[in-house]
Length: 400
Image (cartoon, rainbow, N blue to C red; front, top):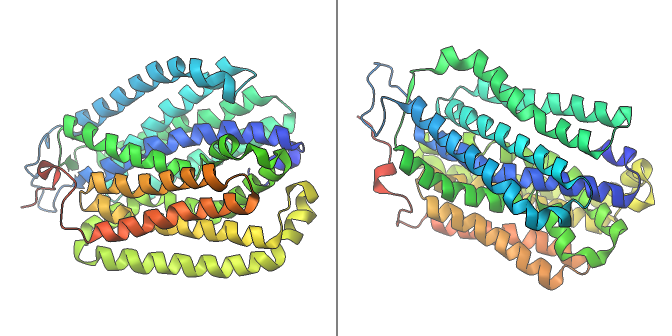
């Protein structure tokens, strides 16, 4: 989709409008993914002998998860339309009501995915968990490309982006419910689950600022670059982060469960994975420096093609973000919710601060985008070795 959309929306201003809607929606989706991460950590399968662990609410985990999801959806339905009176016209000058409605539909559907996927990751039912992502992505690609091919306007495209979340969740739930119902427990009560989720959602919001929400942040902080340069930067960020960062972002729940199940190896594994990610990104950056400009120029023309050095720095910034995606879940797996939040918040805060200071030039904006994740990754590495626990003692999994 990200490769094809600029071919339909040739004007940089049109592409910016689509990017801002997409970025705003997925920034909030990124925030809600924190609910999935906490559910993944809290859900554990019953032992092979069939005995149920003695954690809080272990006999009614389904009710706890359903209640948590319902409370979050209610908050979305109430808060988003109300606050859109402040920011809606600024982000969406045209069709504000319809676009906000599409966002509400998207976020309510994603809460369903977050609860279901968290349950599936906690149970280590990775086949069903991956099916949720695949059904959602394929359906969105078909709908969005179909709407753009027909030549319909922005509002139909917005609803094509929003609808697949709920459809994917309902489809996979219908296929998986017999395999998961009654087969798991959670280690926290509803109140604790919501309290922990507030922290993981705040951290996930910071994640969204660094990834899916960057077009909106750059629009607000670096508008002096001009529409053409800014559109070219957004395209480069999108095309390079899709293969380098987004897969690791999608693996947050998997990494959390993996680190949780092997606590003695978690730190070493996180550092090795982060080092491997950085090495891959350095290699890709070198190739992009040499060939990137020519490839983008051949596909999109001069308006969307940055120079090779800038493209290489964009790739390196993606590597820094990818390393943070690998390291941070080790904190969540240890139950250090507040420190997990601190790592991501320091990365997002540093990025925004650097953009406000240096974001008026292309080189400064790219360095700001890279600097924040580097700071966040270093903070997480330091906190992983910190003996002070960031979570409630009650939230530690009870094992017999």
